[in-house]
Length: 184
Image 1: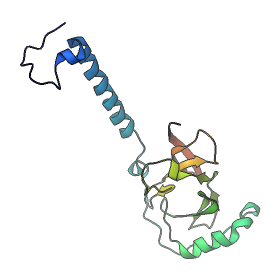
Image 2 (image 1 turned 90 degrees about the vertical axis):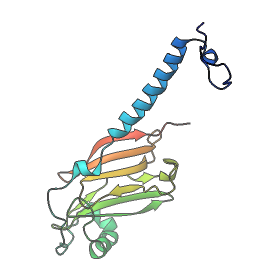
Image 3 (image 1 turned 60 degrees about the horizontal axis):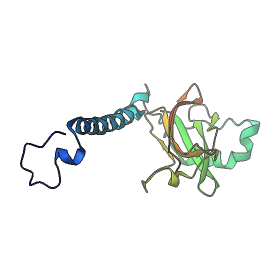
Image 4 (image 1 turned 30 degrees about the horizontal axis):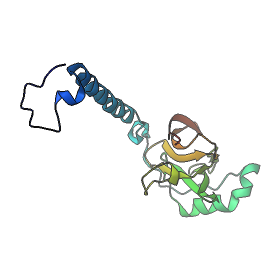
């Protein structure tokens, strides 16, 4: 065993508490690797700026809705959005959501230039259980970005509680990455 050559007056830290110098080195290596892993994981999360649009935010008149047969069930909600919301997503889209149950949202984006509707293909629920942050938003988006972030369970699916990153490309939501919250 390696003896501590410094004064043994400090009862809180000495190599003797850890057993040996290799044990101390191993402990510090593990702590360093754990912290480094957290930094790397956080730095690789998608960023709204990485999905910036290459156009100005549209501020013209919103085109009349072009509804399909499947859209008719939500015609009132979609019409309300075109009359009350300016483009708020990906340059020229109006993203609108509404409740579909307790702690559940569904929604669509409407192209303000063409009036076409593109559906978010899943509901998002239970976002309050996905984060310790009381200010968490179940859906985050920006007018100048194609990225959208959903927090919670998609379609209330077990094991899917987390943060889900998508980009809106060619009129569809394309999955980028999910960070699933570990179950307790």
